[in-house]
Length: 167
Image (tube, rainbow, N blue to C red; front, side, top):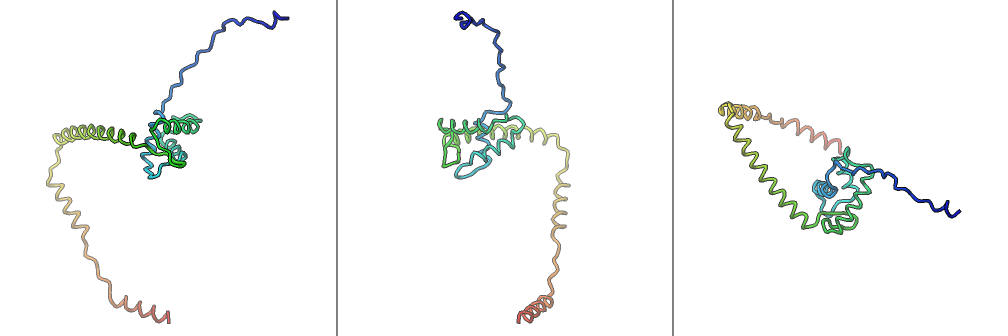
């Protein structure tokens, strides 16, 4: 009997799990984008954050993303990336500063790219400038039409009729 109970387990072939790869951006990045879009002074509720994230990344998110989102919000508060105000969350000052610095760098890069693009388009531009200015002047002339003055008699007659009906 004792021999039957003690069975030696042979090492079975374990199923190798596939690493879970996510196609959506990291949760904190999605949270940060949602908070930047919402721009609420006293922070945004988890529901509003989830709604914005769902609008933008609906096809990429798993079914249980709201549960994960709430955990990520709590973890971000613990790390100091977010500040919890009552039942709302907002970006901490250090996170805001970091994002502003990144935004400035991105804007500089975008401006440089825009300048290069405008240089290319200006050199290949074949429009004469005179036709553009003439078109603007014609539009201004069309917009300014003389208004007809209201007749004085009609407004006076209406006032007398109103007084008579009120009495």
